[in-house]
Image 1: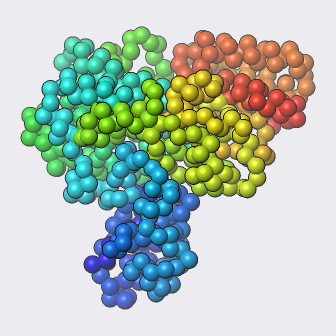
Image 2 (image 1 turned 90 degrees about the vertical axis):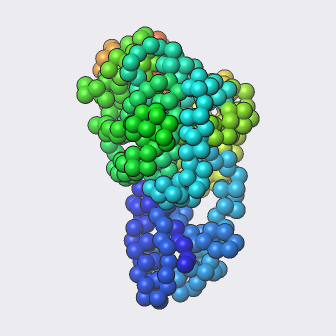
Image 3 (image 1 turned 30 degrees about the horizontal axis):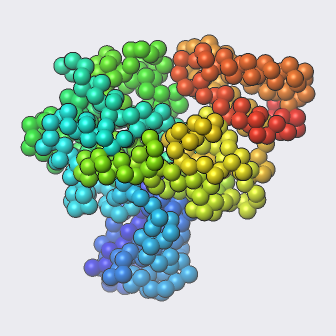
Length: 514
């Protein structure tokens, strides 16, 4: 029987993957051919979606992008045999985009049926959990600490230290919370993992629960991800049926279960304490710290809060050992990061690599430069509150400390590209405007400072007392950085100041109000 793969992630679905799958089944039936149609996750090459793959003795041959109306001609030309065609990409694993990656978080994404427990186990799933359950919890934490795993949500805090704090805090009830409220512009790695390999997230959360003594886990998922919600919800039910969750995880006697909760669309709930407030049924507003969530978290109990990529890394760390993970990357940035290429870029998608690959290589070599073909002007890394890095400053390694030294932040690994038509005064204004819309309103520097920021930028670009207002804008940025309760207000000045620093000419060419 011929095995054909058609992705079922939301990016592919949005451009006709379901219709392509249906057309393939219909054409095969008309020809009397038996096929096994597998709906897999994306391979991450979003410019080629829908990407159809056919299993052959030489490997999985890819065709893309495939439109529903082209299916009949493709099958007639020999698609089911891996025949040559203008859409034939060759063996997918041998394409430079795939060949050059080091896929740990994405190891099974695009390879397997996301909801098949058999596929998951056959491709290494639960190996980390089984090993963890054979070890004392303290040794599991030591393994994670040795790996050098840091939080992939943006702050880069060492996961092992956070876990040890929770483990050392006495309480009869502890929680593991996965922050899947992926709200930064240009980020979609969490969604791709949850739609393409949800069991890996559940495995990582279960290992964390065992390590710290937690009995319950919660996934806080943004409501804008309905496909991820459906896939993850089904995966949780399947995991319970398989004995991977519940009162006796894998026959070990360890009790742990996971629940899925949907957010209401507030960007601020990506901040860990706002997320906890929302999980408790309250309005998502930032909590003052201390106390930290590791000691006083969900419902006042010790809580591990990690994001999707952090927890997805845990299974591989326990399966292969912390030392092997730590061998990847450089300095204090160990292991891999899933970089997301978006914006005005020719080849957008996800690219997982060990830390240290240069930003320039990601954008220009793998990303192919701008989609428009115009000169690249700037790149924003780290979401809508990340700094703008000019085109001549991209030759920096993707490393937390290297980015900090360059006055930037790596964040969640989102990379948004702009060509030379972008107006940076407009982008600086957008940062303040974004803060106005998304601030929880709890602290004055963020709530009021962002409003004053929009007004001040409008005055600058309109030429109203420009020097005085530039000074005022810088003072306002200082106040927001030093006085805001959380990173929402504290980071908003980043794009503003980087735009002023690198593109000052734009602040005299934009009419107020644009």
